[in-house]
Image 1 (cartoon, rainbow, N blue to C red):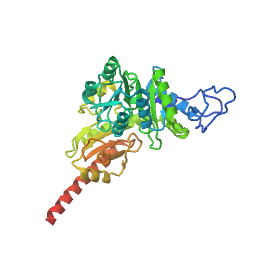
Image 2: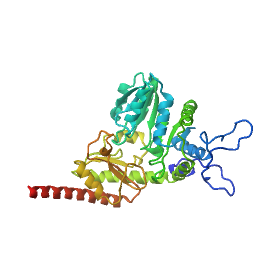
Image 3: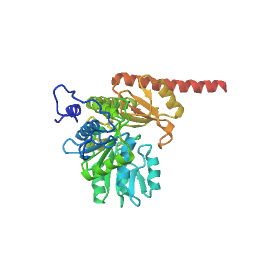
Image 4: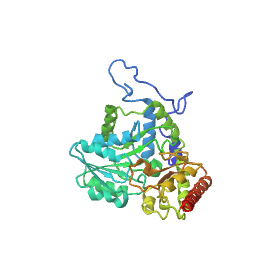
Length: 387
């Protein structure tokens, strides 16, 4: 199988059996029949589950189609991130994190430092993490970064990190394994939140870690068992079911995101427009070399003049949910600064394009921008009249 769509549809399915479903239903089991010695693939519900097995095999096939990869599924993306960090780092170690990465990384930093781990940070752009890499045990990369959409050179960073004795983990949430394969680019771990584009329907919390190294995966799996950060069988089954449409969704979302970014490029009220697929984007040339053609992600980011302008824009949208996720089949957008965890302007918008017809979505966005502009003008006029 060479096509993304074919691989996604078939990934992780068991060998066909007469009168059995193609994808077996979720297995709900806290324990299994276990006579005699505790030997066998399924012994206790915190350790293993047949539904996890199918999903983990499927994700491994997508993350590493040319080589065997081991995947461990988790209850959330943060559980997966924590598993890599805390299974690999010890007191006295140093780790390099992106300074512009996921919103909860500062909280992770606080926890790591409380355990005696040195945390260094640098921006994603221009491979700046190399400047603080010496002596580190682990390099954590997020590319494209969330929410700023900067891109770094995974292969360059991985090669240099390995030369200096560090492991490399890449948060691949935004790109998905169809847009970027970190293990092929030299990373030791590919980590993602399956809550986002991987499952794509906004109804599952999930995370995963993939690696080609059996010793590394054993440590990650042991961490999952120890802390109990296991996914539910229903969530795992829903995730596997959703993989069948991953290629369709990612292609439609990426095309829609590029079309939206192109439409926004000439809007005078829009500044700081970012999307890796946009030819004028600062990261475009690197993204073209590193990511799969036409798979630059669903997210477009841009800034409106101020908080009030951004909120008027969001309120005027009719085809877009004001929500804090991305990668779903329904378009979402939010004023990211409302959370206070990202170093972004008050008018910064993170916009995730769904699978709506791009013409409909763009028309709605442009109309909402016009409405926000008109409301601003009316407010200014009212203020002038009152004075």
